[in-house]
Amino acid sequence: NTFCRELPKVELHAHLNGSLSHSTMLQLKRHFADTGKADSTNAFFDEFQIGAGDTRNLSDCFQVFSIAHSLTSTPETLAMATKLTLQEFQDDGCCYIELRSTPKDTPCMDKRQYIDTIVQAMQKSCVHLTILSRLIISINRGSPLKEAEEITDIAIEYKKKYPEVVVGMEISGNPMLGRFQDFIPLLAKARQAGLKITLHCGEVCNPQEVLEMLQYKPDRIGHAVCVNPKYGGTNETWRMLCETKLPVEVCLTSNVNTKSTPDYDSHHFKELYDADIPVIICTDDKGVFATSLSQEYRLCGETFNLSQSQLARIALNACQYVFAESARKTLNDKLLNFIEKYEL
Ligand code: 5GP
Image (cartoon, rainbow, N blue to C red; front, side, top):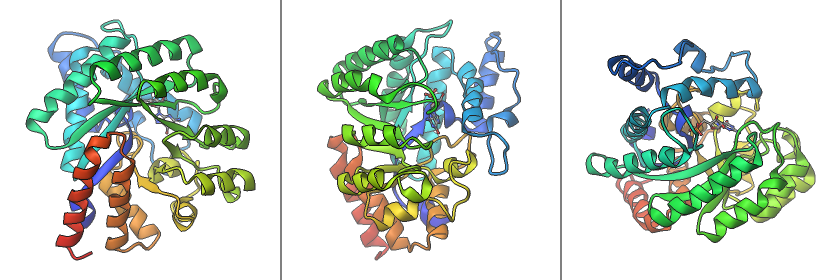
């Protein structure tokens, strides 16, 4: 759909290693072959993608990331992955992206070098790309607290070093593992250093945790599937979201393909939209779920019968919630120009 591709969009929920396209993965694999290094990916690329009819559940889905992780284990391939992914988002009409990624120790780099590599790749991309890119540093809730502490310290260090690039910290990973409460002191520390916070919230039914997260008042939340009582939340969790009106990063295809949501028609987007809760259409893992940001806009429009004007207003509204406050006006103006030009 040309309209959804041409619409200037912001992407606020994209995991780097889940965003690698088939073509990017092939290029990374080729780089390993050309430089005489063996990558440890013996898995087939087909195993990386999770389609609607896939029998794997949300927990199984976390295993597919190890395929991407082995391809981004050197500074060279991680930089390539960042650059190629930014290029693909730009080609899809995305004008601003907050990529997120979990720092890892690999045989070729430590967590600091991991972050450094992505930051440098983002800075270099400014030369030949028009897309604005920022970084959100992820904590995997399934990893030991010691590691989360280490990552928080690195995030704060890089926020100081590159305030224009590093904008936030987030918690993701398997929602069946770890306790949100344990991370609160780390989030507080990060916030104090100027990092914005977003949380994967309500991917599985856990009303107690959803309440704790909403009470914490992060800057945004991701998914928010099990918040409305219709989808495994309680009256209390839903009332709290309606009161706080926290912006929700909505990932339709991801929720359908991981079976967090039975199908597009019954996706909770409708309840959020009708309740006037800010929604931001995002991809989550465009490589794993074989989607794109413009496709997510198209699917959302088709499923919920939204006009082009309504879709453009969703994109416009999203600009208010980007973590890089200095970019908000530019993005807002870009969307307003588009709306005026197409008389939406
Ligand atoms: P990376 O942080 O390695 O760049 O991206 C992949 C990681 O993002 C996964 O290992 C996982 O921790 C996190 N992730 C990707 N997609 C999802 C998702 O749909 N839900 C949650 N909770 N975490 C995710």
